[in-house]
Length: 262
Image (cartoon, rainbow, N blue to C red; front, top):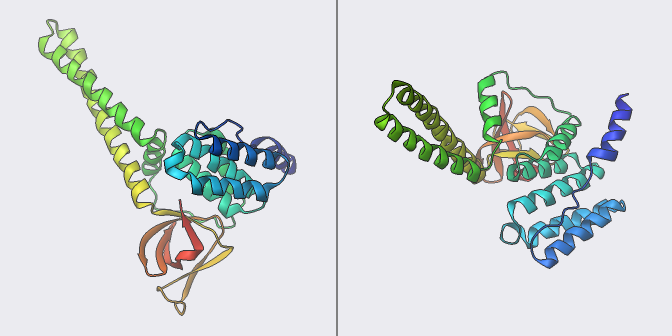
């Protein structure tokens, strides 16, 4: 049954998005060319074109939505080649641009089941995880827009409260304004959190097969724990060619070339 579910996933879930990217003709042509190669089983060639598309056009030539589609298809091409770490990295980058993309969420979850490491953070409070998931529901610009809308309606509620002639109207407008104020503040906090995440880029994916975390930024340091390809880590600080990283309750030093930032 498990083997059947994997086969069905590979046939149905790991599919590319054939939607044309609404940008320059050359970018659209490259995207369709890569999609065709993927459909024909030429995953290496498709991956190279997706990579070239991101490198040549990137943020200036592609919208966030279009880049998310390219990253999603790139993740599928890597997965088909057995490059689990690179596929997870591509899916994570896709979801950073388009948090609501269900296919990317599904494929990321499946790819993560192929990771050897299963490091848990026993000190993570469930509310912190819930708030992070809430933050990722919308993009930074959407949270800002929601905050502005709530703030404007809240001002209208204040005016209604001040001019209301009945107790029911004043009471209702007061509570509505209170709720909208809370939503507006929460939206600004989420927008700022997303901005910091995208600016600092402290999250990364291990892209090499096996990585030993050291007790100090030196090859002679003591091995503390081992990480494998595809594991998601947090970067605490960088010192030369070394990174001080944290994963779960573990902290150590690994070399910069063993990971890629999301």
